[in-house]
Length: 426
View 1: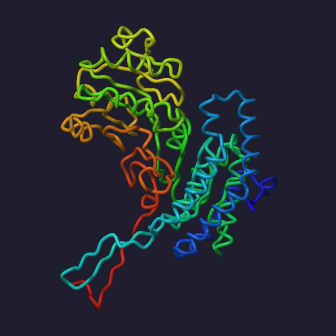
View 2: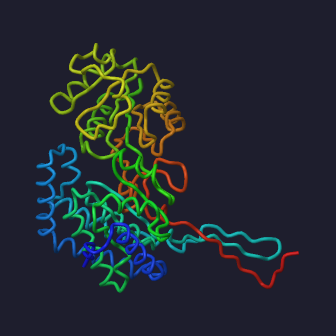
C-alpha cells in the first residue's frame, strides 16, 4: 500500500524521506533480473484490471471535482479514464515487459594497444523525480519504464488526478511486492503543497539524480527556473503540418484532420497548419469545410480571404499550443519559407510535411530543427508506444542525453568497464 503518513511531516521532510527510501530500494532494483522486473509489471497489469471498477469510481470523483472547478474540456479529456483506457494502461505495462532489458547492454568495446579492453555498458540513472499534471496514466508509464530500466521513481502528480493516480501507484507497488522487489522503487508524493515540488527540484537531500516534468508551459518553466539537479525537459508541443505544393490534397486533408482532432489535448496534436501558396486556393476551403463546427481556425489575411470561416489570427496564435479544438492557418510561399516558419514559431517537438515530392520531403526532414520530423503521416504518431518503445515518459525537446520519445534506452546512462592483465601506466 502507498504510505499516507504526511500529517506529522513537513513537505520537505516528507520528500526527503521518499528520496531516502528510493535510494535504499535502488541497489536491488538496479541489479534485478529481467524475469523479476517483467513479473512485477505483469502483476501490476493484473492488479489494474482487477481493480478497474474502483479506478473508474476514483476517476469519476476526480472528473467531478475538475468540472466543479471549471476546468476546460480538453483538460477533462486528459484526466478521463475509461474501460478502454485502463486496458490500454495495463497492456502498456505488458508491452514494456516484452521489451529487451536495457540494463547491462554492451554499447561499445575497444581494445587498446597495451592489451586493455574497455567496455561501455548501460546502467540505470538512479532515482528519478517525475512531476506531471492531469494525466493519471503517466504514473503507470513512468513507473513501468523506470522499473524496467532499473531506476527508482518518485511520482508527483497533480491534485486533479489524485484519486486515480493513487490507485495506479498502488497497483505498481503491489506488482513489485509480488515479484520480490522493493515497493519503494515506485512512490508517490503524498502532499500537494508546492514546497514538496521545490524540495524535489532541489534533489531531496542529494537523493534524486534527475527530474522529468510532463505538463504545460507553466510547469516546465518552474522546473527550468528552480531545479538544482539535472532535468529532462519536454517543452510545449506547438506542432506544425505543412501542405506542400506537391501534396495529394485529399490525403493531406485526412492526415491533418487526424493530426488535430484525434485528441486535441495531447502534445503531438497539430496546432498550426501551413499551406503552400501554390495550392492554397484549392486546399484552404477544403480545410475550412472539414473543420466546420469541429475546430476553430484562425488564419492570416490570405487564409481568411480564401475562406471567411477562418477568423483572423492574432500575433500570439503562431506561437500557441492550444490543446483544444483551435488551430492556426498560415499561407507560406514555398518550402524554404515553411521551414523557416517552423524553426521560428515551432517548439522543436514534432512537425510534418505532406507531399508526394520526395526531394522536398527530404529537405524538410533535414532542415527542420525538431525532435521528430514526419513525412505524410499524422503528428499524433509522436508517441513512444507508436515508436515501439512500449510507453514513454515524455517527449524530450532539448538536445542533451535524450531527444524525442523517452523510453527505456533513454532512461539509462553508462559506465566503463576496463579489463586488464597487470598493465601499469608508464
